[in-house]
Length: 406
Image 1 (cartoon, rainbow, N blue to C red):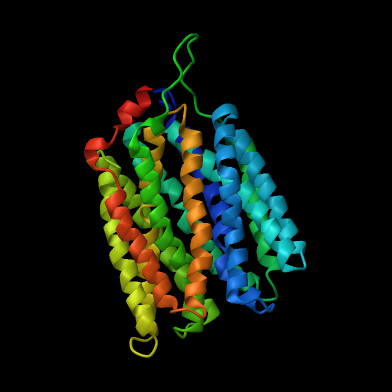
Image 2: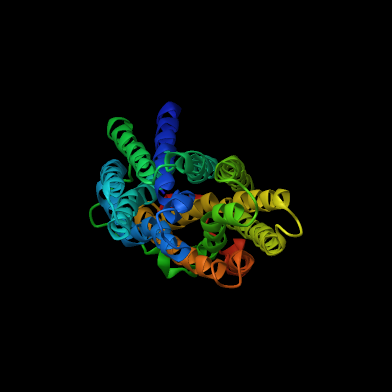
């Protein structure tokens, strides 16, 4: 990644980190908040598989746009990409609020996901460009905490805002994206980039090495348990585990605090040990075990274990499944170097969100009319176990200093 000038004031670094975090909160609330509208959408006559398509629509939009936003960030800078993308998302969510049928709602949500994809492609690059290598794990852990914070905010507010229909929830999400777009325009400055020397060779593609491919693959597998839990836990708690709509939303909101702590802990851990991939593999082991436990509880609850066991299993799974993202994201940026970071991060999020878009409908089919919620969560546990085998070894890992030097 881009080396940070020594004269870069710490206050500016933390200001850009805060804005990157805020942007991710707004984007993730819009992208990942749809599961908390399942009850409201089903009240409008939609089946769970139909609702799952609306839930997956923002993620599908991300898949369509991430590579393009990444290339634009590499060429034109982070500030322009972030402000334009968030403005598009705000307009699309306003359109979803005004739509009166499922198909136009889904199309507006698709566009909202495409616009908000700019945050994933550019804000990570922004934060990493402002921080030196020895602080990046922590900084990216803080920035990546925007995902659980956004989900937690959505869990706490969207079910209540959708009490009279999902329109009010869409309006609030649109407002969050619009405010953040204004903050970016007013306060963000693109980080310095290394000067290009005339006649200098073009940077070598990081994709000539299998390491980056394997990080992409492992992270994609880890998306399956994350979105199996995020997409179905709320519906399962309400429909089968005896929880109220408000209670389930509050529980899942509280678990996001643990998700924030897990991401910060993983980032700090990776800074201290000087490796991103060692911690990533060990976290994948934890995810496989915890989501496997949730699958067992979902198979037995409520007849055997009861609502308290359901809450404990969901809380553990919700925390564990979000913990690897920041470490993997930092690894991708460092492996790619400054010339390729936008495209590599765009590619990383593209495959992750493609997996997420496929996971939610597939898990819904397993849960509704299939083997049940336990089988849907078991799918996530198996995918996490596969990720353990795919993460590269530390001997194959390029150091942050090596990435900076390019």
